[in-house]
Image (cartoon, rainbow, N blue to C red; front, top):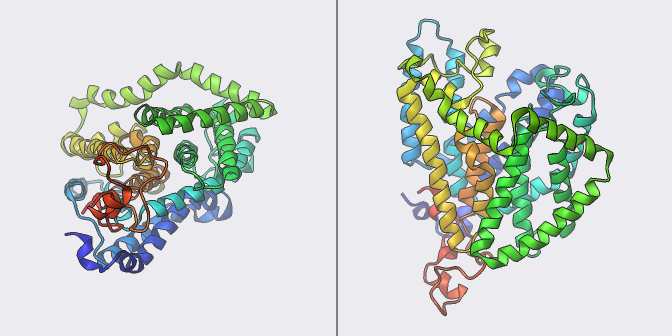
Length: 469
């Protein structure tokens, strides 16, 4: 059912769904800061703060249903059926732990509808405001990561969840992998990749964000990459840059913007090289790549291998799995048994759900990623770059990031939702002014005429293709 039937105008739609958007903003902010509470502010409540976004997402769904904007589509239906069957199969085990099983349900299904709710109630301007939030946090986040990189392993700066001293991973040459405000080091690469998408987008839009803010965020991005001690960070940011370069091939105006951005990267790279921390960071990064092979072998080993290796053990996987949530780190909180912990996401999914349900669930994750890729491509043909840049920051994560890790799971839902929401253009907003001539616009037709005749800018926010309606 189209959302448009419930609202008389865009203004009415925005007014009626304001509470949903505020709750989504709370979800995003909690994703950014919950790790700080678990490590430093309220470490004694770490186990409870782990689930701090669950009540928020449930409230979002309740408000979305009451306002007629909760999205029910093929993805949600299939994921719901798979999760229900997985729940039933898990409850049949003799050694079942109810809490662990429901944690598994939470990991596999609870947050997925949020993608499509964000796509319905937010529009491009909302997405740009999320980008502004990330740009404003870039400098303090980079400085925090630098302090964590320079601090000793057992320093308070590198506390783990629960206030555990030295609870962060050691990357290389004795340096801890910075976690920023996130619970663990996996949050840094996700944050920096999404930040890179908005930095690039900001440079393609005139007067969208203050230039001093963009340049400060760019410097912070480079600093964060240098001290990250993470191949993931380097690869994730490179993917965003590659996506922008590919856009420049089809739209020369974007390529001209890339030249200016490239000059800025070189200048700030030169300035950054003057800092003492730069040489230490580069040495640590080089050590990480040497330990894991060069860039190409790192991608091959961690990406292709993570997809193909589970099938080598295919015959040993139980048809109905060992139970939802059993192979996650969170299960340790309730079972104190680490014999079943599996780090690799595809392997974990197959072992927990079994090879039938597990294979179907993994196929759905890949399908969602490809569906978003197709939508981002169509949006690019209309002149919109934002969806493609955000998707570049999260595409691999959509089907590879462990859903049992709350930071990674939250990132997937937020980034994918923002991809959809960026397609929704408010009635008062023209198409992306930085875009080149959209290839699908008829010759001689102005933007006003395009909107008058039902072009991409004519839709009411939340009722367009990004809504999932």
